[in-house]
Length: 212
Ligand code: FES
Image 1 (spheres, rainbow, N blue to C red):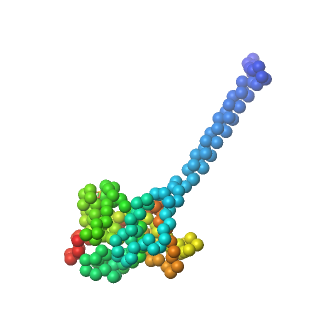
Image 2: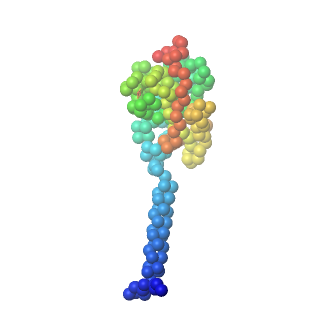
Image 3: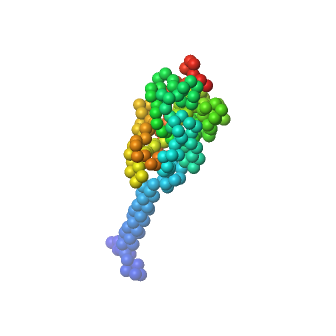
């Protein structure tokens, strides 16, 4: 008949294996909990790309003026209104646009192959140096090869106590709409961890009589 082996300190082999098994389970539980906590921690800190940036409302340019460049957050801030554009100004209206009015935070990466495009004052539009895509002040495509309009970040209007007065909503094209700032807006908050892709609207260069 088989007998349990007893070690020098009084543990049977079976007890020893139980302890090892228990210790392994405990170690796995600790590792799993650690990973879970790590996973749940915010990925980005405030003021870091991928996080939230809070800027005074007067950072926003005047209506249809050239965009405000914010390299740390990789976005442009623009203030657009296609109802006050005249002739070949920056926010010339195109058929099918509807009324476009308010503030937008636009991601600085071209939707074609990811180059960093620039605002070109002389031409009143964004231009990509890599393959020539062009975009209107609000990020709508003027010329390909970009497959869609520029992407946008979520924008919030805050009062002096940092309470949210309004925030950008998702439009029927799946991108963030322009945000009209309520009275009392003291700060703008741009959430660069919350980006929506631009829509593949008709190229503005396809419309007759457009300015570019
Ligand atoms: S990456 Fe901008 S046009 Fe190709």
